[in-house]
Amino acid sequence: MLRLPGSVAPYFEKRLREKLPTKADRVLNRIRDARGGKLNSSVFGERMRGKGQYWNAQETVEVYTRRLGFNEHRVGSERHARANTFRRPTAQGSLFG
Image (cartoon, rainbow, N blue to C red; front, side, top):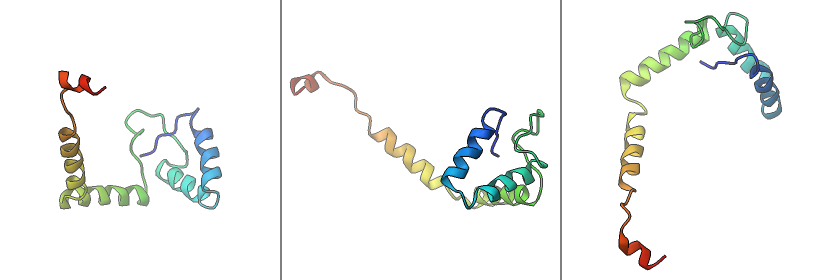
């Protein structure tokens, strides 16, 4: 869930209207729908949670994504690729540098 503290919310809205002028109101309304009419909730325990039909749909997608194993292969292969790219420095490397 998107969290917009007091100082960030106006900046986010400004940038959103610059980048996506036709969709900015729709995005802001979806955030407000999940937050009970506000862009942010500072109540502990509610900050990273939402309410409403769009929030429930998001949770449903996350549950099925995890259950069906989507995105797991991609994350695992990236970690594997990074682990194989490291080489320990050797004295021989200084011969060419």
